[in-house]
Image 1 (spheres, rainbow, N blue to C red):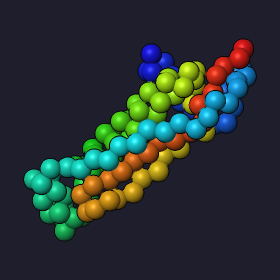
Image 2 (tube, helix red, strand yellow):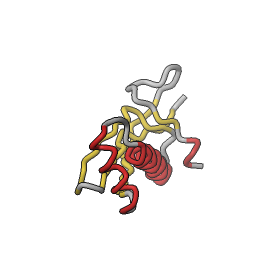
Image 3 (cartoon, rainbow, N blue to C red):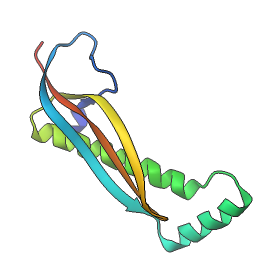
Length: 108
């Protein structure tokens, strides 16, 4: 059911009217294992994309959106508008990503 929740970065959903339910969010904190951290450290010396961290952030983003949808479903929402991401490093090898927005109920 949660995978059917429309998530939009815009304020309006074209062709739909809605009532605001409230704020929703999805949060995750993730880290890579020590071996990938060593590889990333070596890549940092020579330059270029550090794929282990790109994968980490992609996984964290996907998890945060999934949890945002779960939160919206629990509130009885049909969609989330004005979705945004925020992230922060907790330590050298841990990253927190939050997806947040406004849960709405379609009234068409």
